[in-house]
Length: 277
Ligand code: NDP
Image 1 (cartoon, rainbow, N blue to C red):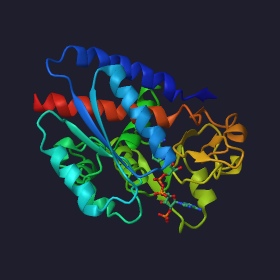
Image 2 (cartoon, rainbow, N blue to C red):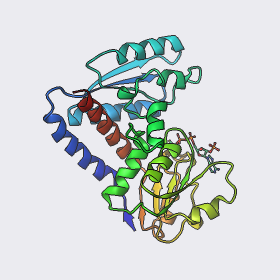
Image 3 (cartoon, rainbow, N blue to C red):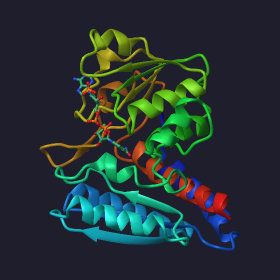
Image 4 (cartoon, rainbow, N blue to C red):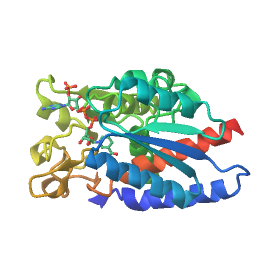
């Protein structure tokens, strides 16, 4: 088994981006909005801001209270997207339940949508055209490609069909000539579907849900899940300990897809700034 070391690859990418940014006359900039008190979101936002600093991206951080109204959040997003000096605007998800997240995200114009969540960017990616890809799916593809893992002609099975992971990842894999199966909570015979995977990707949000009997010998296993268990530890959606010897390649949690997601956010931000310049 080879470990797909997202932490190491993400550090390499940050180093490359640092080189690129240091040659840019105007440094890229990213605005990050955090609404409410979700403790996991606070950690993610801190991580994103720290990573921006490391590569020389200016970051502006905005914090709104949990009970913010739709209008208040929309007003902040609308004012930030108009600022010429800001290349990317990111609204940390999940938003408090009372808010309409889609309506807020849709305010961000495609050129400043560094998270790649806008319908236009998703549509472009789905059509195989150049658009900003969502960061987690892009991070998965980048990780596979840095380990020279062949995608063309392989059978990729994704468990999870969310707008931010499963669906866009399916499009990226299809664009790279994989045969793609998308599974979800209504899928029948999930085990059999997973067993057919050359590349198995879990994006479910259920701790150690994918067990060894669901994985083909020699498969590439990518674990997107991040779950805080009752013992206080972080676990993925994949039963890593029991699958690691069966898989040819496997991502750890933490240290796999998570750092790659942030690295791709930086990449999308640098790209947005470059396009504008
Ligand atoms: P969502 O809750 O939006 O989607 C989960 C998906 O899993 C849904 O499509 C759901 O199916 C499917 N699912 C749920 N239960 C089952 C089941 N029993 N069998 C088969 N499919 C099932 O989650 P996200 O995509 O937002 O996140 C998934 C995980 O990835 C989470 O742990 C999250 O924390 C993590 N994550 C990690 C990131 C990173 O950077 N590493 C970034 C984003 C997310 P259905 O559609 O039918 O409900």
